[in-house]
Length: 125
Image (cartoon, rainbow, N blue to C red):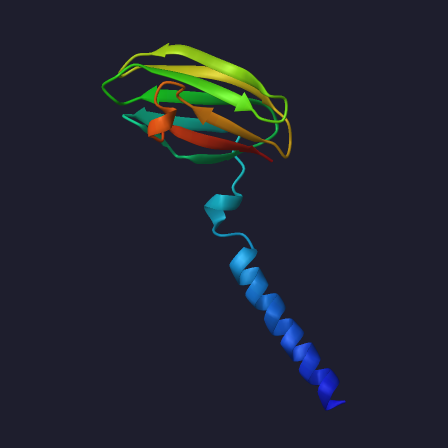
């Protein structure tokens, strides 16, 4: 009987540790938005990860940097660019609408500056 109780206590402790390490990280990680906003500066997209609802959503890009940017939203499952912005001038802003499939991760990047780290993710929930 003592052995059974010890096994149950150890199992519960392991479950608690697992939940702490691998469960939701913070309220902002689990927040699902209807609209995504990204700020572009030199070699950086902020935030670098956004949780958006699946379906048709609005995505806004604001260029607060000093150089021109291009933006692509790429679906690695379909292997296609689902949205593309050819030119976004400094101090400019552009709004696009995209259709997101639940459970997919979409890559957001500037194709010219991606190698310098200018990329992010949209997670469709």
